Length: 282
Image (cartoon, rainbow, N blue to C red; front, side):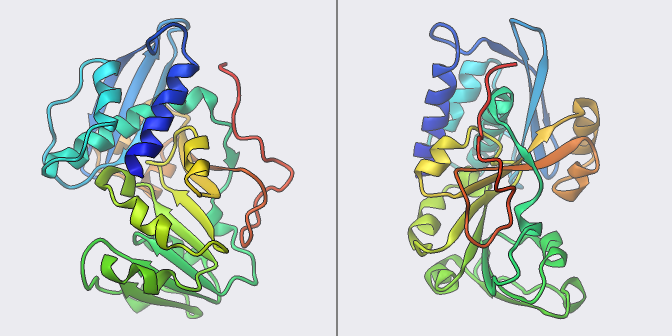
């Protein structure tokens, strides 16, 4: 599933390019402790656009030197510890290539839960998000078995958190009304097991800077909302990545949160007047 989503993104990007190739070159790749950023320059207008992704804590592989190699890495199986990092760098490249075409709606779906939502599941531990929730049960699925729970001081008094390992995903997802899936599942692989286990009635949100590519392939895979990020200040974002920033640290450094949706997902108070999620090259 993760390869199918990424393959479809690559196919869509190629269909939007003139000729057989993608007319861009790698300007710079920055690998930080917690995130990676790829900067690409377009031949036509000489503009630089950047994409981000979560950086798995594994050895850094040899970096690609051209866009063809960058894109190809997204379609290769993840092998060895450095394989997830190679995939993450490639996804950051796809995010940069997608940047001209995605019409992000400003906002964070984690801060837009409807008041009547009582049960949320997350694939990945989004610690800063707990402060945005209110009067809700949160079931967290972590890659590690027996993950430790958040400290009490990290939680609002009316937010109840329970932790689950991957083997208990079906239990954790049962009855969840809204499910947030970290984009890093695309780097590690395994997103399909979670999408298959999410109940049909639930609203599924693919979230994080890693999930900042053309959204149509994710929608076709059953995802309702894609919540990613755009790089508004390349220099500030690059400096933040170098310093080890990730998540909230990047949003204080020229990175803007946004989301796109196919319609009106239940449980999230999105901008219901705006559902167009693509735009022409500008």
